[in-house]
Structure formats: C-alpha cells, structure tokens
Image (cartoon, rainbow, N blue to C red; front, side, top):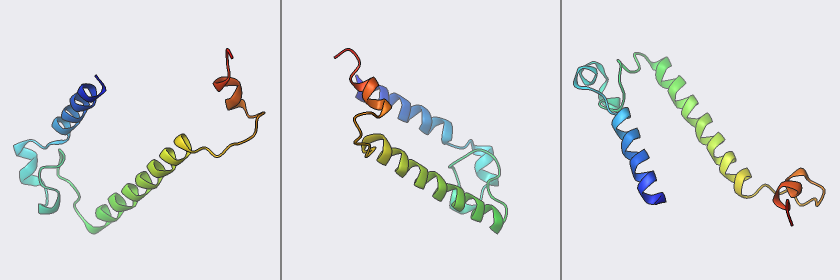
Length: 87
C-alpha cells in the first residue's frame, strides 16, 4: 500500500515539475524541461538557486538526523510522556 501511494506521489510530482513546450523554448540549456517559466536569467540567479538548494539540503539532513536520532536520554523529557502514554 505504501509503495503504491509513494509511486502515485512521485508520478504526480514528476508531472507537475515538467515544463510545457512553450516554456522549454525560453529556458537555458542547463535547466531545459525541468520547470515552467523562463528560468534563471543571470549569474546572480544561479548563485541564489545554488545557495537555496544547499540550505534546503542541510535542513533536510538535520530533519532526518533529529527525527530518527534525537539524542535526548533524560527520563523526564516531555517526549517520554507521549511515548509512554497508556503504559
């Protein structure tokens, strides 16, 4: 069931992210077909996109790290009230 849902989400995101033929003609070679619109028009646009991508990647790494390995060992931490509820 999870595989089917993830496959459907992946396909929908792939379809939304693809550029239409009119937009493809306006885009630079590097990003042709990836997104709608004209794409980056100058060097400063590429710097902003790269910096934003790096920030998003770092944020995603920390999200995964602290979601699965929070590192909190205290028995009085609030998460223990939630995890031990009903026991």
